[in-house]
Image 1 (cartoon, rainbow, N blue to C red):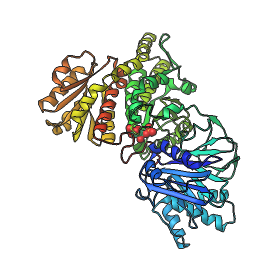
Image 2: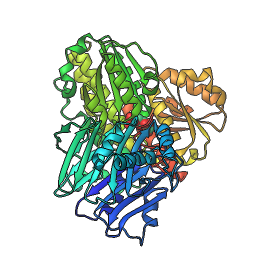
Image 3: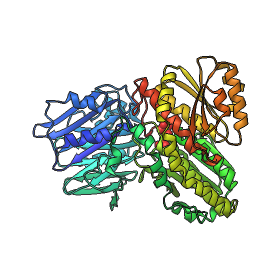
Image 4: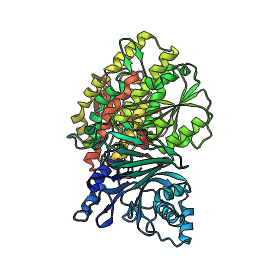
Amino acid sequence: MCGIVGYIGFREAWPLVIKGLKRLEYRGYDSAGIALIGDSGLNIYKKAGKVSELENFSVGKNLSGTIGIGHTRWATHGAPSDRNSHPHTSNSGTLSIIHNGIIENYATLKEELLKRGHFFNSDTDTEVLIHLIEEIYKNDDVDLLEAVRLALNEVTGAYAIVVMDQNQPDQLIAARKGSPMVIGVGEDEYFIASDATPIVEYTKNVIYLNDNEIAFVKRDELLIKRLDNVVQTPYIQELEIQLELLEKGGFDHFMLKEIYEQPRSIRDCMRGRIYPNEGFVQLGGIKEYAEKLKNIDRIIIVACGTSWHAGLVGEYLIEEYARIPVEVEYASEFRYRNPIITEKDVVIAISQSGETADTMAAIEMAKEKGATIFGVCNVVGSSIPRLTHAGVYTHAGPEIGVASTKAFTAQVTVLTLIAFYMAQQKGTITKAKMVELLTELDLIPEKIQRALESNDLIKEIAAKFKDSRNCLFLGRGSGFPVALEGALKLKEISYIHAEGYPAAEMKHGPIALIDEEMPVVVIATKNSSYEKVISNIQEVKARKGIVLAIVTEGDTEVKKMADYVIEIPDASEAFLPLLATIPLQLLSYHIAVLRDCNVDQPRNLAKSVTVE
Ligand code: F6R
């Protein structure tokens, strides 16, 4: 959470940092600020609210300077306000800092600094850190790089920071531990950001800073050290991000654009990995472990939120095809239990951002206990792929809407491939079955395209549901995680209370909620539980609930009972989640738009949850 941008070079920093912060707003958007050093010295502008409010507030002010740092915040310590916005300054006001993460021992450090006469202007942990840096800088007779290094050795917690000194406008100091940071390498200029999106239009050459590394950045010089003072050789990588994926491309919202991108993103995700004619799956990222997969006892999937829902689909598929027992765990619960993990376990960590703090902690714990860890991540070069032993990228491209859409279907696609790959290694699937499944999987992007054609109908249905206060989503089998995901999408972007439930569980409690005002969305496609779901619909109708059913094209049975139906193309049960999710994404989207909600940046949320 929180996005940070730094620049040092020959360009005007303000427009570049503002644009970068807008790209990073998915990480937090409750307040923003920028510090610049220009001819008139240090200027800091901060404002509660979105980056655009900071932009409006700064019109007509002195925005010159070719060195600057900026921050978009998701509040942890201290409410969103002008005074708690970053950058924060040191006691003397000459040092400024931006920070993503949490300084856990800030209270003890603050107490000590207060005793030494420091005066604080905010409620943040970040301000304590910059005061500590200045204290060391002044008292220990060291340069700023060393002062930052020594200070960071005293703090516990997570951080990605950039420090700027008003008296040394030719340098920035950056460091990271547990929060992401990328350095873009230009000609006589460097860019620093939480991810590569603010950098990509200026340079394709980037360095992903590792945990416990500190960078000394001048216009024409870069030095990277570890916190234990050992100098590192920077590893420059080339970025593959396409600039157009970072723009809305004619759509009203990123979320809608990303929903419509799914035929392409799923195709990208499968490219070079499936061979339908040969009935063969190739996953280069985990092939080193192909032998091991024949003898594993169990798979544990760890993830949060939408990624956890993808994990539930993965459980269904891996157990069905590879016949390996699977447990799906919320990373945040798993890490605080004392779970039994052995060297014969494979842990699959799923994360769009690759930065989720709870998922990272779960990985570290499982790794210590000897498990093999695979990552299923979207953001290339993020922290989780670097923590895991092996993995499979989802290649969905940058997902900017805070509500996850194309990343979810790409995760499900990768898990489908992993299930088939494991089945292939273990010999639990015949060649003929594999040819059949892969041939069908290859057609899924076209079927998603067809499912998207219901958009206008869904918009009409959304108008009927937009004033609902509650909504129930029901599904069975692999339709259950789809129901959970449908409910999460609705609640997070439209603020309507929604619950996903296994359809058969409804009668054990939630049925009490049903009345003539309660919309119930039912995944009622033609698969093994079709008849049972029909009975569940009857139960809802008998209590006057309003039923919106997601049905297979050409269905006649459910149409007789449901109040509204949305058709999706026919598919085997294995691929149902990929198709049934599409109308639910569109439904939430249209309801949220009709309710005038901020679809791409829902309240209180951030896309990359780097705090526990
Ligand atoms: C919901 C959503 C969140 C994320 C969750 C995990 O739309 O986006 O629930 O799925 O915060 O994030 P990642 O996948 O980045 O680990």
